[in-house]
Length: 293
Image (tube, rainbow, N blue to C red; front, side, top):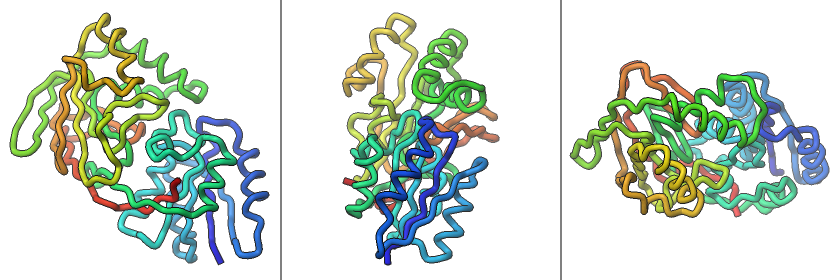
């Protein structure tokens, strides 16, 4: 018998959780399937729920939410090829689903899960915490912090609003990047380490990234100024961001980033604070088994 636990984040970007629950009950009501549906109530609750069901022998853990919810659950599954991570995208950007080609439509995403095809993907590690798509410091981390710590509607629009308002107040900080035995010093607008091509919402930050190649890409963007920023935005959505003169890229299995103590950084859009300013970053190859197309 196949066993599924669906973990729904009711605060995700899409306010259609009851509709999702109804569709799950309709599609998975089969004699050879056992399934349960749980709702998260606080940050990291999804990990507690997943762990309980893993201990009960459930081997299909389905995240219904955004990249933050998926990242929380995936942290329990690294190196566990016997347990599969499924995704029903219901977040604001849905970066992992877009990177893997998982449909954003609920019915289509459910069909992917029922088909049960799996793919092993890499994940990044930052000071013991994982990320699946991107981690970063600088402007994107500032936006993630504001998005997660202010009251607003969900969806992509608040990201753009925070981005516009924050740009005029943002001051790039000293950032040292250590890669392949070399040190590079910047005052970047953005310094992103990418496992996947995009943040989410079709914003492609690292066109050359592949989620199962055993490597990470560092994308460093110097501040191009307001006019350059406006002109360069389109390259973020047509996969040509690396053609900008202000953008540099590096490829490696390991990076170290040194920023000011107490600086904010993000992991798949979830904000964190670095006490000592040192981010040790590495890749775990083929770490997670994902139900995919």
